[in-house]
Image 1: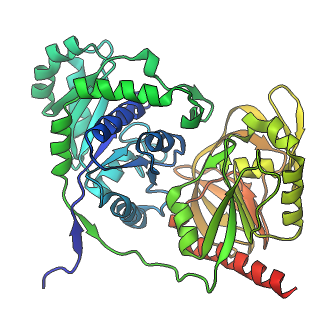
Image 2 (image 1 turned 30 degrees about the vertical axis):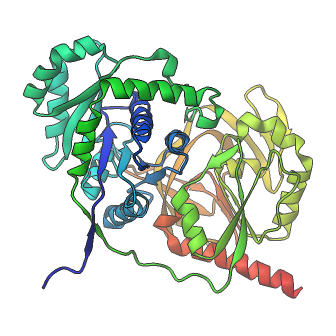
Image 3 (image 1 turned 90 degrees about the vertical axis):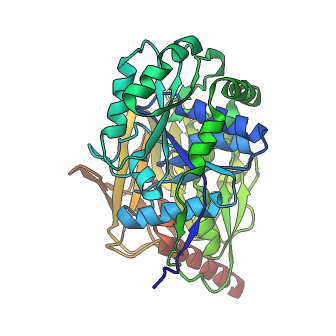
Length: 468
Protein backbone atom coordinates (compact mmCIF):
# COMPACT_ATOMS: atom_id res chain seq x y z
CA UNK A 1 0.00 0.00 0.00
CA UNK A 2 1.51 3.38 -0.96
CA UNK A 3 2.39 5.76 1.87
CA UNK A 4 -0.11 8.53 2.56
CA UNK A 5 2.58 10.76 4.12
CA UNK A 6 3.31 13.83 2.06
CA UNK A 7 6.98 14.69 1.50
CA UNK A 8 7.85 18.40 1.31
CA UNK A 9 10.70 19.67 -0.91
CA UNK A 10 12.79 21.95 1.29
CA UNK A 11 16.25 23.09 0.09
CA UNK A 12 18.42 23.46 3.19
CA UNK A 13 21.93 23.52 4.64
CA UNK A 14 23.31 23.29 8.16
CA UNK A 15 26.51 25.23 8.85
CA UNK A 16 28.52 23.64 11.65
CA UNK A 17 32.08 23.77 12.98
CA UNK A 18 34.62 21.68 14.90
CA UNK A 19 34.17 23.97 17.91
CA UNK A 20 32.82 27.24 19.24
CA UNK A 21 34.53 30.41 18.05
CA UNK A 22 34.97 29.24 14.46
CA UNK A 23 32.92 32.15 13.11
CA UNK A 24 29.70 30.31 12.22
CA UNK A 25 27.41 33.26 12.99
CA UNK A 26 29.49 35.64 10.88
CA UNK A 27 29.51 33.28 7.90
CA UNK A 28 25.80 32.49 8.26
CA UNK A 29 24.87 36.18 8.35
CA UNK A 30 27.11 36.89 5.36
CA UNK A 31 25.48 34.05 3.43
CA UNK A 32 21.95 35.14 4.35
CA UNK A 33 22.59 38.76 3.37
CA UNK A 34 24.27 37.83 0.08
CA UNK A 35 21.47 35.45 -0.94
CA UNK A 36 18.87 38.00 0.10
CA UNK A 37 20.51 40.44 -2.35
CA UNK A 38 20.02 37.80 -5.05
CA UNK A 39 16.29 37.96 -4.41
CA UNK A 40 15.88 34.60 -2.70
CA UNK A 41 13.32 34.08 0.06
CA UNK A 42 15.13 32.66 3.08
CA UNK A 43 14.36 31.02 6.41
CA UNK A 44 16.88 30.83 9.26
CA UNK A 45 17.18 28.42 12.17
CA UNK A 46 19.51 27.88 15.12
CA UNK A 47 20.46 24.53 16.60
CA UNK A 48 20.19 24.42 20.38
CA UNK A 49 18.86 26.81 23.03
CA UNK A 50 20.73 30.01 22.14
CA UNK A 51 18.60 33.17 21.99
CA UNK A 52 21.14 35.63 20.63
CA UNK A 53 22.33 34.19 17.29
CA UNK A 54 18.73 34.13 15.96
CA UNK A 55 18.56 37.88 16.64
CA UNK A 56 21.37 38.35 14.10
CA UNK A 57 19.56 36.15 11.58
CA UNK A 58 16.44 38.25 12.12
CA UNK A 59 18.38 41.47 11.59
CA UNK A 60 19.32 40.26 8.11
CA UNK A 61 15.98 38.79 7.08
CA UNK A 62 13.61 41.10 8.97
CA UNK A 63 11.66 37.98 9.97
CA UNK A 64 12.08 35.72 13.01
CA UNK A 65 14.70 33.00 13.19
CA UNK A 66 13.66 29.75 14.85
CA UNK A 67 15.34 27.42 17.33
CA UNK A 68 15.62 23.70 16.65
CA UNK A 69 16.46 22.05 19.97
CA UNK A 70 16.20 18.27 20.14
CA UNK A 71 16.48 18.33 23.94
CA UNK A 72 14.01 21.11 24.75
CA UNK A 73 11.56 19.70 22.20
CA UNK A 74 11.27 16.54 24.29
CA UNK A 75 14.34 14.41 23.49
CA UNK A 76 14.73 11.44 21.17
CA UNK A 77 11.99 10.85 18.55
CA UNK A 78 9.65 13.45 20.06
CA UNK A 79 12.37 16.08 19.71
CA UNK A 80 13.28 14.97 16.18
CA UNK A 81 9.64 15.06 15.06
CA UNK A 82 9.16 18.53 16.53
CA UNK A 83 12.32 19.77 14.77
CA UNK A 84 11.01 18.52 11.42
CA UNK A 85 7.63 20.15 12.18
CA UNK A 86 9.25 23.55 12.86
CA UNK A 87 11.52 23.27 9.83
CA UNK A 88 8.60 22.51 7.52
CA UNK A 89 6.33 25.16 9.07
CA UNK A 90 8.79 27.98 8.50
CA UNK A 91 10.95 26.69 5.65
CA UNK A 92 8.56 25.04 3.19
CA UNK A 93 7.68 28.31 1.45
CA UNK A 94 11.27 29.58 1.30
CA UNK A 95 13.76 29.14 -1.52
CA UNK A 96 16.38 28.12 1.01
CA UNK A 97 16.62 27.35 4.73
CA UNK A 98 19.90 27.94 6.56
CA UNK A 99 20.48 26.19 9.90
CA UNK A 100 23.29 27.34 12.19
CA UNK A 101 24.83 24.71 14.45
CA UNK A 102 25.76 25.19 18.10
CA UNK A 103 29.17 24.61 19.72
CA UNK A 104 31.17 21.86 17.99
CA UNK A 105 29.33 19.77 15.42
CA UNK A 106 29.25 16.60 17.55
CA UNK A 107 29.05 18.30 20.96
CA UNK A 108 25.85 17.45 22.81
CA UNK A 109 24.58 16.49 26.24
CA UNK A 110 27.31 15.59 28.70
CA UNK A 111 30.18 13.87 26.91
CA UNK A 112 27.97 12.56 24.10
CA UNK A 113 26.30 13.83 20.95
CA UNK A 114 22.66 13.91 22.07
CA UNK A 115 20.94 17.10 20.85
CA UNK A 116 24.07 18.15 18.94
CA UNK A 117 24.13 19.81 15.53
CA UNK A 118 25.10 16.39 14.16
CA UNK A 119 21.97 14.75 15.59
CA UNK A 120 19.86 17.63 14.24
CA UNK A 121 21.37 17.14 10.78
CA UNK A 122 20.57 13.42 10.90
CA UNK A 123 17.04 13.97 12.29
CA UNK A 124 16.24 16.48 9.52
CA UNK A 125 18.33 14.85 6.77
CA UNK A 126 20.13 18.15 6.17
CA UNK A 127 23.43 18.48 4.24
CA UNK A 128 26.18 19.90 6.45
CA UNK A 129 28.78 22.50 5.51
CA UNK A 130 31.71 22.71 7.94
CA UNK A 131 33.06 26.16 8.78
CA UNK A 132 36.69 25.63 9.76
CA UNK A 133 39.26 28.11 11.04
CA UNK A 134 42.08 28.35 8.52
CA UNK A 135 44.54 30.39 10.56
CA UNK A 136 48.00 28.81 10.46
CA UNK A 137 46.73 25.65 8.75
CA UNK A 138 48.01 23.80 5.68
CA UNK A 139 47.59 20.13 4.83
CA UNK A 140 46.65 19.40 8.45
CA UNK A 141 43.29 21.04 7.79
CA UNK A 142 42.43 18.12 5.50
CA UNK A 143 42.88 15.75 8.44
CA UNK A 144 40.46 17.83 10.50
CA UNK A 145 37.92 17.85 7.67
CA UNK A 146 38.25 14.13 6.97
CA UNK A 147 38.01 13.26 10.65
CA UNK A 148 34.94 15.43 11.18
CA UNK A 149 33.14 13.92 8.20
CA UNK A 150 34.03 10.30 8.95
CA UNK A 151 33.61 10.32 12.73
CA UNK A 152 30.02 9.03 12.36
CA UNK A 153 29.09 6.93 9.34
CA UNK A 154 25.69 8.60 8.92
CA UNK A 155 27.00 12.16 9.19
CA UNK A 156 25.79 14.13 6.13
CA UNK A 157 28.84 16.41 5.76
CA UNK A 158 28.92 17.59 2.15
CA UNK A 159 31.52 20.35 2.03
CA UNK A 160 33.47 23.04 3.83
CA UNK A 161 34.14 26.77 4.05
CA UNK A 162 37.49 27.97 5.35
CA UNK A 163 37.19 31.01 7.60
CA UNK A 164 39.83 33.57 8.61
CA UNK A 165 42.20 32.74 5.77
CA UNK A 166 43.92 34.72 3.05
CA UNK A 167 42.12 33.87 -0.22
CA UNK A 168 45.50 33.24 -1.92
CA UNK A 169 46.33 30.61 0.69
CA UNK A 170 42.88 29.06 0.19
CA UNK A 171 43.41 28.89 -3.58
CA UNK A 172 46.82 27.27 -3.04
CA UNK A 173 45.48 24.47 -0.82
CA UNK A 174 41.93 24.09 -2.14
CA UNK A 175 42.55 21.17 -4.52
CA UNK A 176 44.64 19.31 -1.94
CA UNK A 177 42.06 19.78 0.78
CA UNK A 178 39.29 18.52 -1.49
CA UNK A 179 41.26 15.51 -2.72
CA UNK A 180 42.49 14.36 0.69
CA UNK A 181 39.28 15.02 2.64
CA UNK A 182 36.81 13.85 0.02
CA UNK A 183 34.70 16.98 0.62
CA UNK A 184 33.83 19.86 -1.68
CA UNK A 185 35.46 23.23 -1.06
CA UNK A 186 32.73 25.90 -1.05
CA UNK A 187 34.74 29.06 -0.56
CA UNK A 188 36.61 31.01 2.04
CA UNK A 189 36.30 34.08 4.22
CA UNK A 190 39.22 36.36 5.11
CA UNK A 191 39.71 37.71 8.59
CA UNK A 192 37.59 40.88 8.81
CA UNK A 193 38.35 42.51 12.19
CA UNK A 194 36.03 45.45 11.52
CA UNK A 195 33.10 43.04 11.05
CA UNK A 196 33.36 40.99 14.23
CA UNK A 197 30.52 40.78 16.74
CA UNK A 198 31.40 41.63 20.35
CA UNK A 199 30.69 39.24 23.21
CA UNK A 200 29.65 39.50 26.84
CA UNK A 201 28.89 37.07 29.66
CA UNK A 202 25.94 35.32 27.96
CA UNK A 203 27.51 35.25 24.49
CA UNK A 204 27.36 37.82 21.72
CA UNK A 205 25.91 41.24 22.43
CA UNK A 206 22.38 41.41 21.08
CA UNK A 207 21.87 42.54 17.48
CA UNK A 208 19.86 45.58 18.57
CA UNK A 209 22.83 46.98 20.50
CA UNK A 210 25.15 47.26 17.48
CA UNK A 211 24.71 50.71 15.94
CA UNK A 212 26.32 49.97 12.57
CA UNK A 213 25.12 46.37 12.25
CA UNK A 214 23.44 46.80 8.86
CA UNK A 215 26.61 48.35 7.44
CA UNK A 216 28.58 45.40 8.80
CA UNK A 217 26.12 42.95 7.23
CA UNK A 218 26.53 44.66 3.86
CA UNK A 219 30.32 44.32 4.07
CA UNK A 220 29.98 40.65 4.94
CA UNK A 221 27.56 40.10 2.05
CA UNK A 222 29.94 41.75 -0.41
CA UNK A 223 32.73 39.46 0.77
CA UNK A 224 30.47 36.40 0.54
CA UNK A 225 29.59 37.25 -3.07
CA UNK A 226 33.30 37.53 -3.80
CA UNK A 227 34.75 34.49 -2.02
CA UNK A 228 31.97 31.97 -1.25
CA UNK A 229 30.81 29.50 -3.92
CA UNK A 230 27.18 30.64 -3.65
CA UNK A 231 25.94 28.72 -6.69
CA UNK A 232 27.53 25.51 -5.42
CA UNK A 233 26.05 26.06 -1.96
CA UNK A 234 22.59 26.48 -3.50
CA UNK A 235 23.05 23.35 -5.57
CA UNK A 236 24.03 21.40 -2.46
CA UNK A 237 20.97 22.69 -0.59
CA UNK A 238 18.67 21.69 -3.44
CA UNK A 239 19.94 18.13 -3.25
CA UNK A 240 18.48 17.72 0.26
CA UNK A 241 15.81 15.02 0.39
CA UNK A 242 12.15 16.09 0.86
CA UNK A 243 10.96 15.96 4.48
CA UNK A 244 8.00 13.83 5.61
CA UNK A 245 5.16 16.08 6.72
CA UNK A 246 3.69 14.28 9.72
CA UNK A 247 1.18 16.32 11.72
CA UNK A 248 2.00 16.39 15.45
CA UNK A 249 -0.51 15.45 18.09
CA UNK A 250 -2.08 18.71 19.24
CA UNK A 251 -3.44 19.61 22.66
CA UNK A 252 -7.02 20.87 22.22
CA UNK A 253 -7.18 24.65 22.79
CA UNK A 254 -8.96 25.97 25.83
CA UNK A 255 -12.59 27.03 25.60
CA UNK A 256 -12.11 30.77 25.27
CA UNK A 257 -9.30 33.29 24.85
CA UNK A 258 -7.11 35.16 27.31
CA UNK A 259 -4.80 38.15 26.99
CA UNK A 260 -1.22 37.26 27.95
CA UNK A 261 1.11 40.21 28.61
CA UNK A 262 4.67 39.40 27.49
CA UNK A 263 7.60 41.55 28.67
CA UNK A 264 9.71 42.54 25.68
CA UNK A 265 12.33 45.29 25.48
CA UNK A 266 16.10 45.74 25.81
CA UNK A 267 16.13 43.95 29.17
CA UNK A 268 13.73 41.10 28.33
CA UNK A 269 14.24 39.66 24.86
CA UNK A 270 14.86 35.93 25.28
CA UNK A 271 11.86 34.11 23.81
CA UNK A 272 11.44 31.20 21.42
CA UNK A 273 9.13 32.17 18.55
CA UNK A 274 7.53 28.72 18.36
CA UNK A 275 7.05 28.61 22.12
CA UNK A 276 5.03 31.81 21.90
CA UNK A 277 3.09 30.27 19.01
CA UNK A 278 2.14 27.27 21.16
CA UNK A 279 0.69 29.67 23.74
CA UNK A 280 -1.33 31.38 21.00
CA UNK A 281 -2.55 28.02 19.71
CA UNK A 282 -3.67 27.23 23.25
CA UNK A 283 -5.85 30.35 23.38
CA UNK A 284 -3.55 33.23 24.33
CA UNK A 285 -3.69 36.63 22.64
CA UNK A 286 -0.24 38.14 23.18
CA UNK A 287 0.30 41.79 24.03
CA UNK A 288 3.85 43.05 24.53
CA UNK A 289 4.97 45.59 27.11
CA UNK A 290 8.22 47.14 28.31
CA UNK A 291 9.14 47.02 32.01
CA UNK A 292 11.66 49.78 31.23
CA UNK A 293 9.55 52.23 29.22
CA UNK A 294 5.86 51.58 29.96
CA UNK A 295 4.24 53.02 33.07
CA UNK A 296 2.15 49.97 33.91
CA UNK A 297 1.01 46.56 32.73
CA UNK A 298 -1.46 46.53 29.85
CA UNK A 299 -4.89 45.05 30.67
CA UNK A 300 -4.26 41.31 30.77
CA UNK A 301 -5.30 37.95 32.18
CA UNK A 302 -1.77 36.55 32.58
CA UNK A 303 1.90 37.57 32.51
CA UNK A 304 4.99 36.04 30.90
CA UNK A 305 8.36 37.49 31.95
CA UNK A 306 11.11 35.99 29.80
CA UNK A 307 14.87 36.13 30.15
CA UNK A 308 17.37 38.67 28.91
CA UNK A 309 19.80 41.16 30.43
CA UNK A 310 17.95 42.92 33.27
CA UNK A 311 21.29 43.36 35.07
CA UNK A 312 22.37 45.82 32.35
CA UNK A 313 19.27 47.95 32.94
CA UNK A 314 19.06 47.67 36.72
CA UNK A 315 18.73 51.41 37.33
CA UNK A 316 16.11 51.99 34.61
CA UNK A 317 14.04 49.06 35.88
CA UNK A 318 14.33 50.34 39.43
CA UNK A 319 13.38 53.92 38.54
CA UNK A 320 10.17 52.78 36.81
CA UNK A 321 8.29 52.65 40.11
CA UNK A 322 4.82 52.64 38.54
CA UNK A 323 5.58 49.50 36.52
CA UNK A 324 6.98 47.78 39.59
CA UNK A 325 3.85 48.69 41.53
CA UNK A 326 1.65 47.47 38.69
CA UNK A 327 3.36 44.08 38.65
CA UNK A 328 3.20 43.78 42.45
CA UNK A 329 -0.52 44.51 42.35
CA UNK A 330 -1.10 41.89 39.63
CA UNK A 331 0.95 39.37 41.56
CA UNK A 332 -0.98 40.06 44.77
CA UNK A 333 -4.20 39.64 42.80
CA UNK A 334 -3.07 36.16 41.70
CA UNK A 335 -2.87 37.00 38.01
CA UNK A 336 -1.21 33.87 36.53
CA UNK A 337 2.48 34.55 35.94
CA UNK A 338 5.37 32.55 34.46
CA UNK A 339 8.88 34.01 34.85
CA UNK A 340 12.14 32.65 33.45
CA UNK A 341 15.68 33.61 34.45
CA UNK A 342 15.90 37.40 33.89
CA UNK A 343 12.16 37.74 34.45
CA UNK A 344 12.49 35.81 37.70
CA UNK A 345 15.36 38.07 38.77
CA UNK A 346 13.26 41.18 38.16
CA UNK A 347 10.50 39.94 40.47
CA UNK A 348 12.87 39.91 43.48
CA UNK A 349 12.85 42.60 46.15
CA UNK A 350 16.32 43.87 45.24
CA UNK A 351 19.15 43.41 42.77
CA UNK A 352 22.79 43.79 43.87
CA UNK A 353 25.03 44.73 40.95
CA UNK A 354 28.74 44.00 40.49
CA UNK A 355 29.63 47.31 42.21
CA UNK A 356 27.67 46.31 45.29
CA UNK A 357 24.83 48.78 44.68
CA UNK A 358 21.31 47.69 45.61
CA UNK A 359 18.40 48.43 43.28
CA UNK A 360 14.78 47.97 44.37
CA UNK A 361 12.93 45.76 41.92
CA UNK A 362 9.36 44.41 41.87
CA UNK A 363 9.32 42.74 45.28
CA UNK A 364 6.89 39.95 44.39
CA UNK A 365 9.56 37.33 45.19
CA UNK A 366 11.29 37.64 48.58
CA UNK A 367 15.04 38.06 48.66
CA UNK A 368 17.86 39.42 46.57
CA UNK A 369 19.36 38.51 43.22
CA UNK A 370 22.98 39.31 42.41
CA UNK A 371 25.74 38.82 39.83
CA UNK A 372 28.53 36.29 40.24
CA UNK A 373 31.84 35.75 38.44
CA UNK A 374 31.00 32.40 36.85
CA UNK A 375 28.23 30.42 35.22
CA UNK A 376 25.74 28.93 37.66
CA UNK A 377 24.05 25.55 37.10
CA UNK A 378 24.80 25.65 33.37
CA UNK A 379 23.32 23.25 30.82
CA UNK A 380 20.41 21.00 29.99
CA UNK A 381 18.28 19.67 32.84
CA UNK A 382 15.08 17.73 33.38
CA UNK A 383 12.74 19.40 35.87
CA UNK A 384 10.41 17.39 38.09
CA UNK A 385 7.57 19.10 39.95
CA UNK A 386 7.43 18.45 43.69
CA UNK A 387 3.89 19.85 44.02
CA UNK A 388 0.86 20.76 41.93
CA UNK A 389 1.26 24.22 40.41
CA UNK A 390 0.20 26.63 37.67
CA UNK A 391 1.85 24.61 34.87
CA UNK A 392 1.59 20.98 35.92
CA UNK A 393 0.89 18.36 38.57
CA UNK A 394 3.32 16.93 41.10
CA UNK A 395 5.64 14.39 39.49
CA UNK A 396 5.38 15.85 35.98
CA UNK A 397 8.65 16.50 34.16
CA UNK A 398 9.89 18.85 31.45
CA UNK A 399 13.23 19.36 29.69
CA UNK A 400 14.84 22.74 30.31
CA UNK A 401 18.06 24.74 30.03
CA UNK A 402 19.96 27.01 32.43
CA UNK A 403 22.57 29.62 31.46
CA UNK A 404 23.16 32.51 33.85
CA UNK A 405 25.83 34.37 35.79
CA UNK A 406 23.43 35.67 38.41
CA UNK A 407 22.05 33.90 41.46
CA UNK A 408 19.40 34.40 44.12
CA UNK A 409 19.16 34.14 47.88
CA UNK A 410 16.20 31.84 47.17
CA UNK A 411 15.98 30.09 43.79
CA UNK A 412 13.06 27.97 44.99
CA UNK A 413 12.48 24.37 46.04
CA UNK A 414 9.23 23.42 44.30
CA UNK A 415 10.93 21.54 41.46
CA UNK A 416 14.06 19.39 41.32
CA UNK A 417 16.47 19.84 38.42
CA UNK A 418 18.35 16.74 37.23
CA UNK A 419 21.36 17.65 35.11
CA UNK A 420 21.52 15.79 31.81
CA UNK A 421 24.53 13.52 31.46
CA UNK A 422 25.32 13.81 35.17
CA UNK A 423 24.20 12.61 38.59
CA UNK A 424 23.90 16.16 39.89
CA UNK A 425 20.55 17.53 40.97
CA UNK A 426 19.35 20.56 42.92
CA UNK A 427 16.14 22.27 44.04
CA UNK A 428 14.81 25.11 41.93
CA UNK A 429 11.76 27.19 40.99
CA UNK A 430 9.13 28.82 43.16
CA UNK A 431 5.71 27.46 42.20
CA UNK A 432 2.12 27.68 43.34
CA UNK A 433 -1.31 27.79 41.71
CA UNK A 434 -0.81 31.23 40.15
CA UNK A 435 2.98 31.53 39.74
CA UNK A 436 5.95 29.56 38.45
CA UNK A 437 9.31 31.31 38.39
CA UNK A 438 12.97 30.37 38.40
CA UNK A 439 16.19 30.27 36.42
CA UNK A 440 15.45 27.41 33.97
CA UNK A 441 14.13 28.15 30.48
CA UNK A 442 11.61 25.79 28.89
CA UNK A 443 10.16 25.51 25.38
CA UNK A 444 6.41 25.02 25.26
CA UNK A 445 6.73 23.03 22.03
CA UNK A 446 8.17 20.27 24.22
CA UNK A 447 5.22 20.54 26.66
CA UNK A 448 2.13 21.76 24.84
CA UNK A 449 -0.08 20.56 27.70
CA UNK A 450 1.78 22.91 30.10
CA UNK A 451 1.03 25.81 27.76
CA UNK A 452 -2.64 24.77 27.65
CA UNK A 453 -2.76 24.60 31.45
CA UNK A 454 -1.18 28.06 31.76
CA UNK A 455 -3.61 29.61 29.29
CA UNK A 456 -6.57 27.83 30.91
CA UNK A 457 -5.58 29.42 34.23
CA UNK A 458 -5.50 32.83 32.53
CA UNK A 459 -8.99 32.24 31.09
CA UNK A 460 -10.27 31.13 34.49
CA UNK A 461 -8.81 34.28 36.09
CA UNK A 462 -10.50 36.38 33.40
CA UNK A 463 -13.88 34.73 34.02
CA UNK A 464 -13.51 35.09 37.81
CA UNK A 465 -12.65 38.76 37.45
CA UNK A 466 -15.70 39.48 35.30
CA UNK A 467 -17.99 37.57 37.66
CA UNK A 468 -16.81 39.72 40.55
